[in-house]
Amino acid sequence: MRAPFIIYADFEALNIPVEGCACDPGKSCTRQIARQTPCSYCYVVVRCDGVVKAPVLYRGENAVSHFLESLQAELIEINEVFRKPAGIIMTAADYRAFRSAIDCHICGEVLNQDRVRDHCHITGKYRGAAHKACNIQLRISSDGEYYYCRKTEKMKKKRPTKVPVVFHNLRGYDGHLIMSALGKSEATEDQKISCIPNNMEKYMTFGVGQLQFIDSLQFMNSSLDKLTADTSELWSAQCGACGVVGEIKDGSISRDGML
Picture 1 (tube, one colour):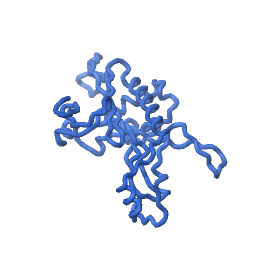
Picture 2 (spheres, one colour):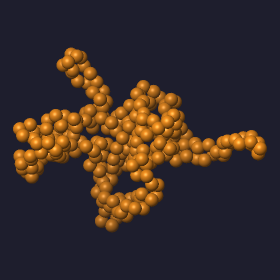
Picture 3 (tube, one colour):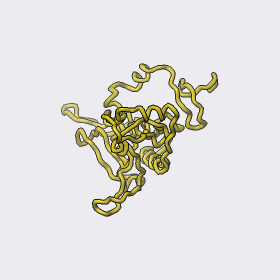
Picture 4 (cartoon, rainbow, N blue to C red):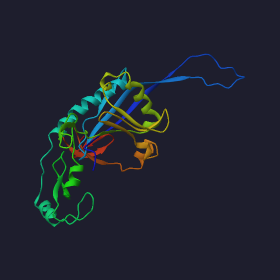
């Protein structure tokens, strides 16, 4: 299943020279000559059906802390969507497909009499016939939801649906900036932090509460410049500000020859 929402982000930093003592030419040493200071970020929130929210751009001091605070604000909006799942929308063709379905579209096993209608809780679109148990595995939950556990006879907190945050080269660069700011940011002070490390300094992925930070470089091992050059010149998307659907060229959405 596609993630209901995904966030693509990037930081920009200033390369500030650092003055220090000169090294002894007769000895091997390492000397810091510059400091990377984050000065801006930009991110965009994409829904599972391709609807893109207007990009968020920030330039100024404390860019990383401001970024973490902005993501928490985005989570509030996303969780509101999770709390109000869309009802199923089925066409006549969808009904015919459901009645004639033989296999579960999730696991591929035979359905028999155990079948339910699986649909996207974000858009309401019908996805296919599925086993009840398989369908339950794809449910979405917002942060702060609880359920009654019959085994323990207690209320338990549901595991909220993760929201991926994608950086290109998170492991080698952006992850250092975020980790350095986590201990100082009030927005994440009560958030659970988890990680899968390569070593003490590099992380394949890490989670901050409901946010799961991942590195696109690990499965697209090339520069962004080359990756974008290899794709088509035009893409189709929906503007998050006005709802216009059109082709993207040079960063703008065109419709009927107009931008």
